[in-house]
Structure formats: structure tokens, C-alpha cells
Image 1 (cartoon, rainbow, N blue to C red):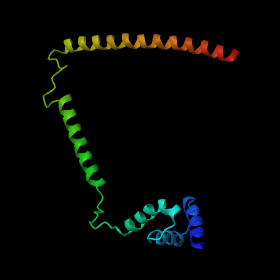
Image 2 (spheres, helix red, strand yellow):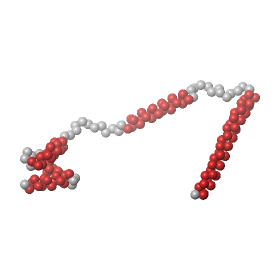
Image 3 (cartoon, rainbow, N blue to C red):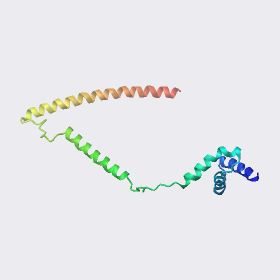
Image 4 (cartoon, rainbow, N blue to C red):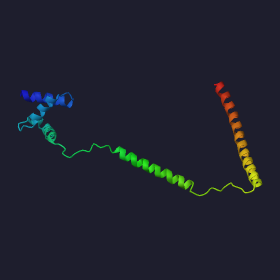
Amino acid sequence: MELVKKIELLIEKYFAAETTVAEEQELRNYFSQTDVAPHLQAYQPMFVYFSTEQQESYSKTVSLKPRRKKFLAWISVAAMIAIVVSVWVANPFQPNNLGTYEDPEIAFQETQKALEFLSANLNLGIEEIGHLKEFEQAKNKILKNN
């Protein structure tokens, strides 16, 4: 009867995660017997399972080689291929004769057109920045009043 009370206390400690390794071994030994108290038989399959599964081992060899290096090597190769293909598609190996003129007068006129176009677009950008300055001033007035 004392043994049953001790086992009941050990089960309570076990489920509260307060048992030592020796106490857990004592529980496994008790429940591996055929003579278990009737009200404790519900715990018997659990402790029998724990004791039998503790004997099980893994017999295959485990490779400890790092696989990450191979993965990174393949990623770097793929990245290099992507870069080479994108450069080739963007600029195939053809002579670039665009923008060359035989007559210097035509080249000068085309350069003036390009600079006028750049100047006009630059002036538009400057006008937009002027609107931003007005917005900034209005914002600062509002923030000072609050």
C-alpha cells in the first residue's frame, strides 16, 4: 500500500515536471510489472511505451557535410549566367554607329537640338521644384501655427 501511495505522488510530480531521472526510472520499473494497482493501470501503457522506445536506436550513418556550400555555389553560378544574359540582351555585340555623322555641320545641328530638348525638360523640372517650395512654405506656416 505504501508503494502505491509513493507511485501516486511520483505521478503527480511527473506531470508537474518535478521528478528526477531516478524517480522516472522508478515509475517505469513499477509500470513494467504485471501487478499494477487497478486505478493506476491507465498510466501503464504510457510508461511501458517510454521504456521500450528508449531502447530503440538509429543505425544509419548521418552525413555531417555542410550542404549549404553547394547550394551557394549553384546560386552564384545562376546569378553569373543571369548577368551575362542580361548584358548580352541589352547590348548585343554589334558596332555602335548611332550618333555618328560624316558632316560636322549636321552633327552640330543635331547636338543643338539635343541640348535644346534637354534644356526645355530641365526648365520644366525647375518649375515643378518652384511649386514644391510654395508647398514647403505653406506647410511651415501651418506647422508654426500649431
